[in-house]
Structure formats: C-alpha cells, structure tokens
Image 1 (cartoon, rainbow over the protein chains, first blue to last red):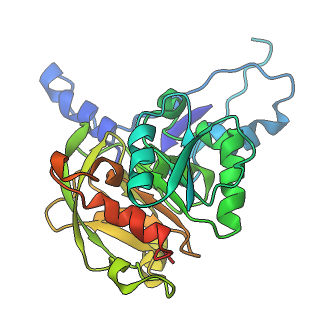
Image 2: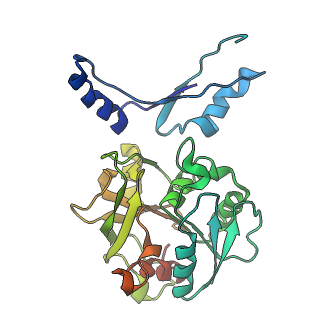
Image 3: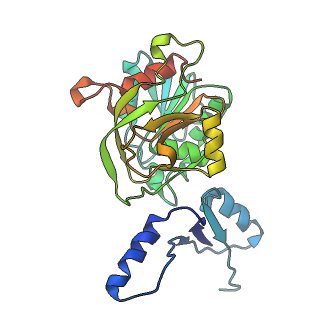
Length: 72
Length: 224
C-alpha cells in the first residue's frame, strides 16, 4: 500500500526535503511529497481497500494505492 | 460528577488529568484501555501522551481499544467527553470529532504557554459564571502533531454551527492550524477536543490556573 498526503494539504516533510536538494546539487526538483509504504501478505486481497480506509490511511487527509505482487 | 480518565499504553498526562478533575470538584478514576465497561463514570477525559507509541498515525490504533468503544457509547448518550492533545487526535481518528491533526508546520515539537480564546460555550443549565465564551485562557501547549486541518467546506460548517470551541489568540498559533483553531466540539456539543493542556494549568504555582475553568465548565454542563 502506498499512502500519501492528499493534494492541497501542506506536507512539511516534503517541503523540508525539497529545500535540502539544491544544497546537494539536485536542481529542478519540485512538488516533493513524503508518504509511507506498507508491505503485507494477504491470502485474499479483496478486503485490502477496506483495511486501508479503516486503519492504514486516514481518508480525510491521505490517498492510497494498492499494488499486488503475485506469489512474492 | 465522576470522571473517568482513559489510560492507554503510552499515555503520559493521565495523573494531571485526574488531579484537574478532582480540583474542579468531582471524583476521578483511571479507566484502563482494556476496560469495556465505564462502570458509573459520568464524564470522560482522553488524556495526552503517545498512545500505542503513536504508530501509523497519532491516535490511529487507540481508537480500536475496548475503552474507546465504551467512550463512543457514552458520547452517543450525550455524556461529556474531553480529549486533550493525543486524546483530541484519538477522538478525530474515532470519528467523534471532525477534522484531523497534522504534523506542525514548523516540523518542530512545540512546548510553550499559549493564550486561547474560548468560543461557543454556554449551555442553558450552567451557571453564568461558568460560561467561558470570550475568556482568554493561558495554557501550555506541547505537541509535534497539532496542526488542525479540515476541508474548507467543513471549516465553514464548523464555524456556522458554533463548533469551534477554542482559538489561539492572534499571533499565538504554534503549529499552523487552520483558522487558528485550537479546539472543536461535535455537533451535539458534548464532545470537545483541545490541543493545548488545561490539566497542566490548574495550580497558580505553575503560572496559571486557567485550565481549571475548562473542567469546571464541563462539570457544570456548560459545554453544550
């Protein structure tokens, strides 16, 4: 699960990372957003969206995506 | 009035909350997070701290505890519930209060005395002396994730319904909260969340006893 702050919500972590980049010589990078990734193994992925909405993400402030990797 | 103060693993302000409840004229006892029955408690404080280590998001795990199920039932029955700091975060995650609390704009943990303006208090049954709307209270704030946020339409609705209970005084917003909001109430008015800590300001020896007004007002039914 990839979870990130919703568009339009100030992300101070992303801003701090963005401000640090020019000092390291990385120019032309903008709109940095910092979220989090949750890895898990599930026998039945059908309920994973519900799991995200109820616990892993707060749908008011965060968007989530689910990426499946079969047989990993 | 008998207060229950919920204690999660990682709570750290429950002792001060107990004392504040007692100083405001009530009795108070701790409610362990695994207790499903509040057993005769009239009002609840969800105190500050770092419940369950604040893993995932502040307050996200605490909402699934048996004690919070009991608190939700008390709130639905109209019982007063006060969430302070982490307790405010828990009440937002539980859905008992609107909005969310995000990382401070400064990315820094804030620990300082702030001035709050009380709004929207004044239940019909409470004595006039405990209608604290319009009062300015000096209370400590200490948090890393206290930036109140809600979508613009929700903020407008909160203002229209008089659900904003406290604002930081002009120039005192320590965390970038939307519209200087420091505390909100639910629509019925019996659930209150507040980021700064009234329970740490109940004795003049520590610089301010203004926090006691919050507990006295709730005990007197002035919240609604």
